[in-house]
Length: 189
Image (cartoon, rainbow, N blue to C red; front, side, top):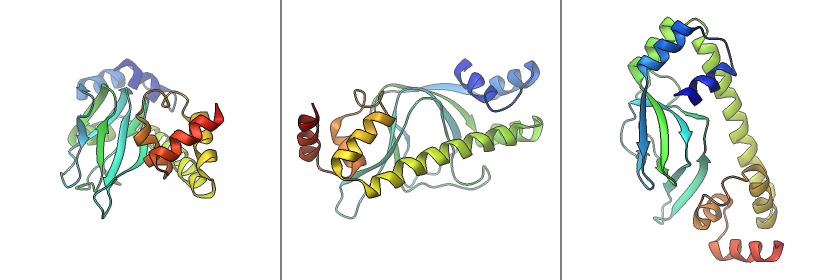
């Protein structure tokens, strides 16, 4: 919980009563490796913040192959839909790659925080803007790079993920085969 509060405080001020309210509305959960945080086709009823571990966002293409869209690592907010009121049924899966710890809020508790804490929406909007910019920067560069450049860029931007994420997931994220990734890794050593 402390990690979440400290993260919020980077984007705005909260007093002790507000922090106590946030803490009272939150639940800390653990996901074991390979457990789902959410599944495609099932309505999402919570908002989460990843405090420890790595979650993979993926979907199945029309050939039934798993395609990794991106990775969520520590200190990232996991929202459901565009607004907290939206009934959100994802088309993707969020699965723990490692054992994970999250701070989660029911949608109602999240709305209660928004209605009670002055400046809450501003803090959350700043976090969303930061994460959205990071995600766009990650994905847009992948389009214009070859496999080697993509991998080198990946290890530069995500040095902590290289040893925590299976190579098959990294290859899928980079849009290359696992054998191509192995060749690239061998050639850059």
